[in-house]
Length: 209
Image (cartoon, rainbow, N blue to C red):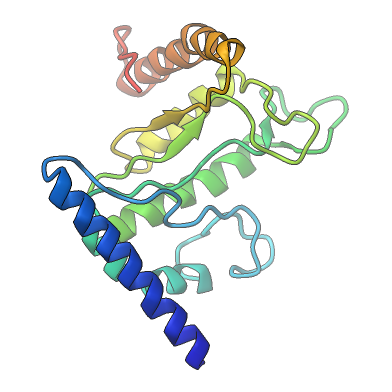
């Protein structure tokens, strides 16, 4: 218990000192840290069968309450929602492969991530951090995410109170930069337009990220 208290006190001091120093350097910028609350899909911090944070009443949410000081300090809440599982558009597939999930499970865990973030944010903006490619241990690691999965992500974020979305893509060389431009034009931007049209009932969706 002494180690736990010492560690938690150090983390709090470090995070707050970092935040306030950044705020001092650029006071008009919005400052936060990435991956808070931490991403959950299946966890021993929720009952068996619960996806993500469930109904926000479980141990996982109670632990987040212990660091409410963090959410009260930062300017925005940025949970990580990088795709690790592949959403199958026509479910069930003829043959289910490792890492593939149904639309229902996908919506259950992702919607709970957003709702937990909104709960902790207490009115501050919530910008989940999404990705154009898969970050996973399955064979489709670093493969592009298909448009229909982006559309579902955008819809779920909007319907559960997110203020927007950050789409991150790490670029290590010119080939990856070219891939990013291709994914933006062919997958991400059309998905944003389609989702906006579906949510708002218009045909003039915004392509912003």
